[in-house]
Image 1 (cartoon, one colour):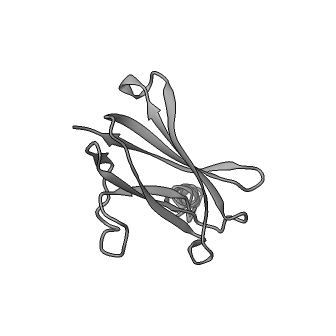
Image 2 (cartoon, rainbow, N blue to C red):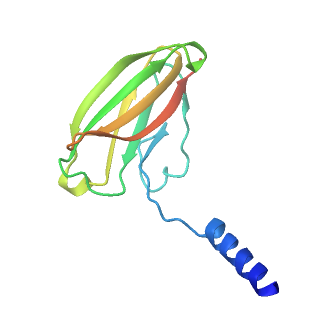
Length: 135
């Protein structure tokens, strides 16, 4: 009986304590251009008219090397509708097949959602992240 209980506990622990190595895509925001010194100081709150530097990372190579990046303004209280305010199709460079970085500027306060879509077949959402413009 003791061996059965011990075996059950070991199986239970191994299922819930295993380290999963699922790699994900991310969108990070910063007030400064991304480099090795500014990678750890990210933020998602900005002032109107301020440059919003963003970094889109992918765990595996996108075959078409094309991304569609969209910014959607969320409605009041982040739940009452949305409006597409900016979009850009980009071609990733050969030396940057796992990331893309650029900046945008918005002047209207509110909550925004940035989405990155792969232009591969079938197109799919790679990553999404929110940022805020506040006075």
